[in-house]
Length: 335
Image (cartoon, rainbow, N blue to C red; front, side, top):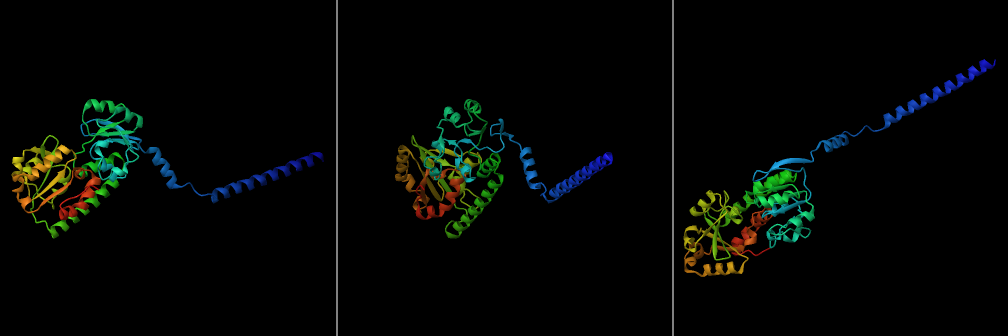
């Protein structure tokens, strides 16, 4: 009897445990069925993040093979085309004030550290950059900088489209670079259509002149403001300036006696910063040789600050907006 009761008790416990396990199993299955499936997007994102390269290799303008961050965040830029970065929404942590003082974007650079010109290695080191971009091709300078961070030599005098696409590639902003260029060229085309319908005749020539300290006169070619003027739908260079362009030179020093040869139908004077160069400019514009130029006689001489002749993307965009005003008022002041 005791054994039967004991057996019955064990059977009862067994049944009870079976019921509990069945209930737990059902509950667990119900929870699994009711729980959301793992997010495919989230899983893909985690996979992409895990597989995305943190570094990549690039060849710079002089042939250095350099391993750089896939998406640099703390760059030092030492060169003339700082405005290319700003056009893409990239703010470097360091640059040389010699390249941005007096520019139209100087007031946007309050958080930027001046690393000097020539570049100051200790200041760069203190900034702890993850990338350094420099226009200087001096191998000694490059060697010192490359000890601080990955360093690329960039050609700041390359054509705008080439430079901007390079910055888009370096900073993982290729789409932004292409969109900026598309918008810019549309504005550029609209500008020339507007100017041709108003006053500029097909085939009109133009020259850009400036003085440097030491009474040195230069005609500008494949650089800065000239690059805006010498477009397919824009002004044409004179034959002598075309020779400079064909040689791929940004500018060429000339004597004043060559003015009749280089002067176009319209002359643009880049007002220098140096008092010495300003005085040379004024003396040229008082000379008989100058007064006899057709552009001068026709009132087709225009002046703008040399800082507005920068070739960077930000300045270029500003200038194509201001060119009609310059042609109307004969003079353009700093922003």
